[in-house]
Length: 445
Image (cartoon, rainbow, N blue to C red; front, side, top):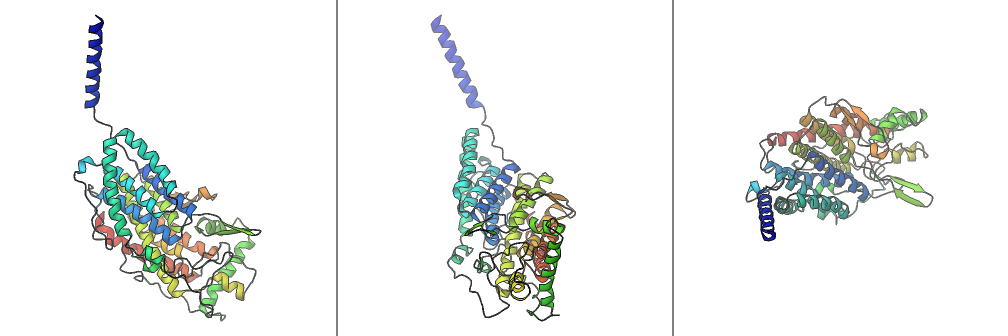
């Protein structure tokens, strides 16, 4: 009887094993929230590592493109960017699409490319290791095949990325300040940093024909003669600042200036010590708005990645266009001229960032991003912008992306860091870049 019971138990065990072997493994689910988490991780690392606005725009673009291209392979809604992006060639395709979870591969590729573009790789690895361990437990076969494919795509994207001249610009000479010409940019207090990324116009654009494709209208001719257009714009910066500060530190203009500050290089002096207060870049703010819009629109994974990708391309090309003009015109900042000629004790409400004045980088990036987001989500898309809440600033609400970009642009006047021409012409320059990017990518939707 004991032998019979043992035999029956063995039969039941064998049956259970057969049942479990026949049960299909659970599918690994990737949600839009996981992509938001990956993008947010990149943003937080860039804040920690202190990336300049142009470099930050590059860090966003390549990981998004990698994810987008993977998803586009089996999408009826979105088409590959092959043939659109400059010098871009098709990514590898898996031997069997059915064996690869494309959403999973896209997310893995996003994280892997991101890790190659930041300094603090260990911070990205924390997120990766946590997710990889989880996915391996859910479905080891699906995870391994998807990861293997993702890494093949990463290798391809990295090969393309490494040819955009970024590495070459790391070894180019720093910007030389022309102290003999009073119209030329000079380093500004308190840290008097060198001009940031003077060779950014040599970076390969994503879609633009060249960095100089959308050269803005020339700024008013430099002149300190009273009555000249340039002098009027200089005095406007000074007078607006004086008026704002007289009305106290709680004015609407100060709130707007602080909300759109987005200066990763703000330096604070305490006695003999100087340290940086870390903030997001202008591009990061608009990537945050992209996330807000995607969530409000209840976008699925592919739609979310599409929004991130096309907005980040618009922002990246905007910075290439803007920096091309900045170091060509090489115009002096209001702070320098006001201190030299009007009021030696004057300070702008915002700290002046370390690069030439014309055109306004935030205006150009905001103009370009607003055009792309309007194309993706529609005009009159109202939203509550809480991107700056982690930095102690309140939510601001906007009726449209264009309204947000207009406020971002005028914030530079309120902050005392740009003349009117840099703001207005910069916004126009950015919108031209944005419309060009939209047209180039129209048949990829």
